[in-house]
Length: 232
Image 1: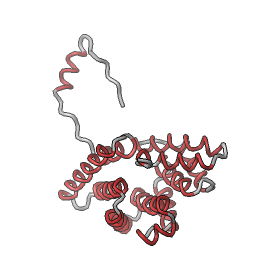
Image 2 (image 1 turned 90 degrees about the horizontal axis):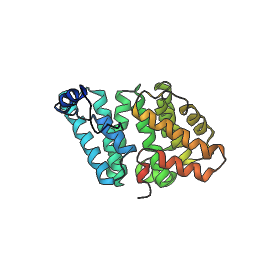
Image 3 (image 1 turned 60 degrees about the vertical axis):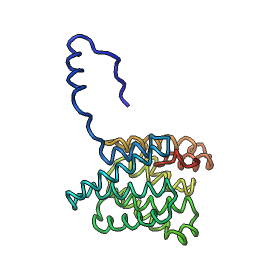
Image 4 (image 1 turned 30 degrees about the horizontal axis):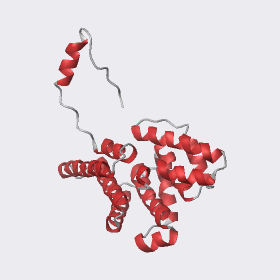
C-alpha cells in the first residue's frame, strides 16, 4: 500500500487540495476479492468485502447480462463466501456456477482456475473420498481444469502459482506442482494477484528445495487465497 507524506510543500499544496476534493474511486469486485483473499486478517471484514464484491458484480450483470468479468467475479465471491463459512450448500452452488461458466466461456483461464481450485480445495480439506461423497469433488477434474487454466493464461504468475500451490497442498512431493511454482517464481506480474502468487511461489520454494515436505504442505495451504484463515 502506498505511503503518503504528512504534508505538501509549496505548489503541491494546491495539488493536494484538488485531489482531496475528488471522490475516491470505487473498488472493483476483483480488487475487493484480492484484498479479502490475501490481505484481510479479520474474517468478518473479509466476508463483508466478499459480499460487496458479489453485490457490485450482480449490479453489473443486471445492466449487462453478458459481462464475462462480472459473471466470474460473482461466482468467485460466492465460492469464497462458502469457503470462509464452511457452508456445504453454498459450496456446491458455487461449483455449479463455475461449471456453467466453464461451459459458457471455455477459453477463460480464470473460470478454469476457479473450477480446478474448488475441486482440489475441497479434497485438501475433506480428503479425496469424503470430498467426493459429500460435495462431488474430484481430483482428476480439478487437475485438468488447473492445467487448462495454465495453458490458457499465458505466462502470468497467477495461474502457474495457484495450480502449483494447490498441488503441493495435496502432495508436497508432487513434481508437477514443483515445476509450476518454479515457473510462477519467474513469471510476469501484470496484476496485484499475480504479485501475490509470485511471492507465494518464491516462499514455498524455500522449504521445497530444502526437502521439508511438512513445511512445504503447511506453507502452500497458508499462502493460497484465504489461507490466513485456515487455522481460525
